[in-house]
Length: 301
Image (cartoon, rainbow, N blue to C red; front, side, top):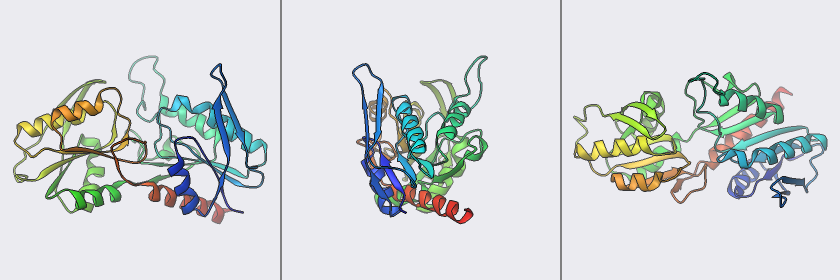
C-alpha cells in the first residue's frame, strides 16, 4: 500500500514533492486552533495499515509541536504501521551543550521528545556542530538531504568567477564541497561570537582572489550578523559586492535589511523555509532521502 502523506498548512510544496517522489498518496488533515488557542487535529484520511509521513517544517517550532504530537499519536492509535517526519528545517540543534549552569541542552531534549512520537526523520542539512551525525542524539532512523549540489549548480549558473567563503572553521568541509561542485576556490573566515548579535570576523589573505565575486555560504541565516560583518570586511578590502547564500532562511528581526545595508549583491536561500529569497530548490533531494530511508526500512523488514 502507498505511503500516506499528511501535509501541514504552509508546506504544500514539501507535501507535493513527497507525493511525487515516493509515489505516495496525499492524505487529508485538519489542523487549526480553538478560540482559546488550543490545537485541534483531525486525520480525515484513515491511516490504518499505512506508512504515514508527516510533512511539516520546524521553523518557528513551538507553533507546531502540539499538532505534530497529536497527529502522530492519533495515527498510531488508528493503526498506522510506522510514522515518519519530513522536516526541511530541523529546530533546536544549536543549543547542543550546556554553556552556563542550569541551561537546558535543547538539542538532546528535543531529540528525545521527537524520537518518542515518530519512528524516523528526514531533514536538510541540520546544524551539526558538536555532533558528527544525527544518530548521536536521535535514536530513531534518520536521513539527511544535502543542499550542496543544488547550491553549487546555482552558483555556476549565476555567478561569474566565484569565490566560496565559509563563515567559520566549522563550515570548512561543507563550504569546500560547495566550492568543489562549482569548480572554484574556497576560503574560510575566523569568527568569534560574543553574543546573539555581537560577532567579530577575521578575513584571511585574499591574495589570488582578485576580481572574483565572494559567495558567502552558511547553513542558517538568523540574525545575519556574521554574514553582514563579513560583507563589510570584504567590501572594505575592495572585492565586488558579495552574494550571500543560506540554506535555511530564518531571518529574525532586521536580518535581511542588515545584509542589504552591508552592501550585498543579492541574498539567496534554499526553499527549506518559505521566504522571498528562496531561489534554490532542494525538495527533490528531500524526497530522494525519504524514499531511500523508506526502501531501506522495507528491505530490513
